[in-house]
Length: 342
Image 1 (tube, rainbow, N blue to C red):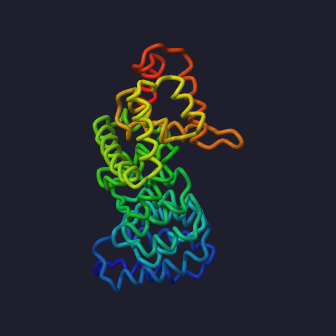
Image 2 (tube, rainbow, N blue to C red):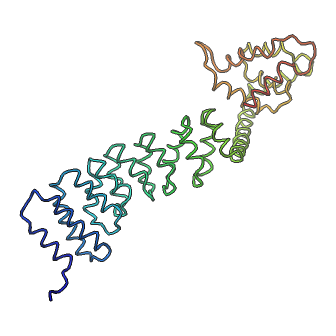
Image 3 (cartoon, helix red, strand yellow):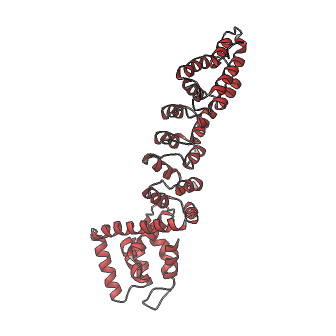
């Protein structure tokens, strides 16, 4: 009775074949041997398979390589050099399964592929169970919309400050990407604040609908920070001090009305207009200033117009209706509060 044959005996028999045209079949049979014995081979045996498979891969068609790749992609002890060769294959049919599933690819191998291959290869990498910061840096920087979106939605992905900043920048006008970033629990709060502040109005609405409490807390934080910055700027501004003193004197004299507001607007005096509206609407001046700045960002100015002068002319309609009372004009308060609510 013959002793039980080992996989290596079968391997030697396969390699003894002289028919070069049968390399694909030989590769399939060697792969069968490896798959059956996976987990039981010594390092030396894995190295032998690695050497043989690598040589055979150089002379088989793409379809055979793709079939071979699919069988090795999920094996934790797959021959490392062979796996790297498959991952760098120009054909996504060959490289895709390994890039997506293989645990034999370390960050260096993934980085090497991500730096030089196309978007299909990047998309495959972006779907891996675990992605280190060095890998996501490249995916976010080089990837197209599909790659960046899949990376940001990958719960196993880790992001450096560089990658998070890049994601926030790309998400300004991309609602789907913004929602992915917004919903990640590992994104630092300061980046979420930046995302919310820099996002388009349409994206802000989406974010607020997804998590109203987070949106509200960030809006409050932004307002508080803006108040501090604006207060410091006003404290050090002689122009503001003079403008506010003058507006206060006009108000004390009972002359702060629609006509006077229009005059301030026609001067193009941001300080006088905001100080006047703060008094007329009984609102904090920081809130008034932010509302004007937000409106200025949404306004397309004509030739020769500045945000300051354009705001003045746009707000001319606030004081159009004639008034006989010294209190807040009826046309002013509702329009301005509506602006603040946007």
